[in-house]
Amino acid sequence: MTRKKRIEYLIVTLCVFFTGFLIYGFVGSIQPLINDDKLKSFLLFGCIGGFGFSMILSTIILTVNFFANRKLVFKIIAAILWPITFACAVYAGIFCYIPYQIYNIIKIIIEKPITNIDKKA
Image 1 (cartoon, one colour):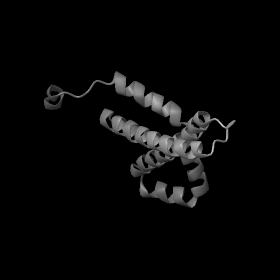
Image 2 (cartoon, one colour):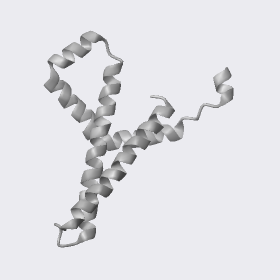
Image 3 (cartoon, one colour):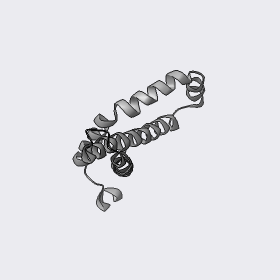
């Protein structure tokens, strides 16, 4: 994945995280469930909504990118064995979400941006 693609992925998943956090945080604080504390309910429901939707989007992006570069035979076998394919996609997208975000941030910081001089060479 190029630096530009990593930045786009990070921006999109973080935007979904923040919107999900705000929407579900406000919904959760309408009728607080945690010791009648609106702030705790806002933070808990916000984290659940933000991480949940961002993880789902991450799963979709990573799965589509993975299958886009595969041959037709592989895609057919993956479609036939869809429960295994689905389980692998869920594992890669949801359970590896936070480590993959950290990895992307580190790669963005380490990689140097391409300058006009590099493009001409």
